[in-house]
Image (cartoon, rainbow, N blue to C red):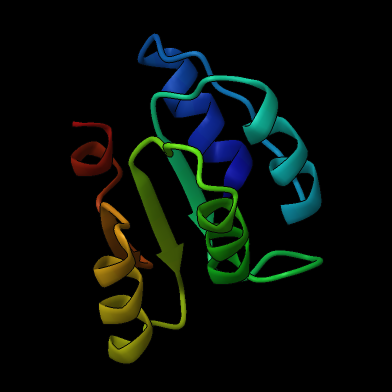
Length: 100
């Protein structure tokens, strides 16, 4: 799914970077400015919630953060939104609507 999202966003004219692991994302997010971050909840090395919490703990401002998951949890969604996440989307979702 990550590759499909990157392809679509690039076609729409967005500059896109895809970090395949949470560890890679942690390194990159501290060194570059991003307009938006989209993270799956299930990552190979840690979950997206842990990624978000580690980024918040740094105390640096974060861009809007959108979480995507195939395993929606109301408790997790509420917790992340209360922490400042912009949205929590469950799969399948409307890609056109996400692009907008």
